[in-house]
Image (tube, rainbow, N blue to C red; front, side):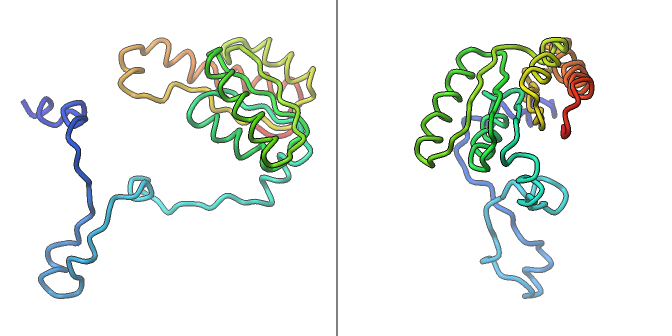
Length: 189
């Protein structure tokens, strides 16, 4: 059937490059040549123009501030942490539910701080965004200025097989984290 033919898992072992090809009409008319073929870039998949990060705005929310990243050990959270450390926060709280991921990003950030000579206090916190009371307590205790919320299950097939956990973590966890930030007086979420 159609759905079986085009399942992404059937393509996982196909090692080929995907390229954007100009419209056939443009090729035939000579407006473009085959040289216009190029590899697909992530921006091609967004469906909109990319927006460059505003360095001034980022610095206002990070430099010499207390910052908290939820999902700090995940793919997006860990990249946020790497970038945040380079912008010089006073303290960076790393919240993650996975002990191994939390340990890994903490060790990487310790090495990065030494390499770039950044004086950032790293606070690894093992926990879940589902515990709004604990999140609020952490935000109050450390006087968090900015929260970057990256704790979410993002692997669609996994979440499709575990919908209740996906809803709880992604929707309820986001709500509880936002409510905790509001209650704790966090400036930026």
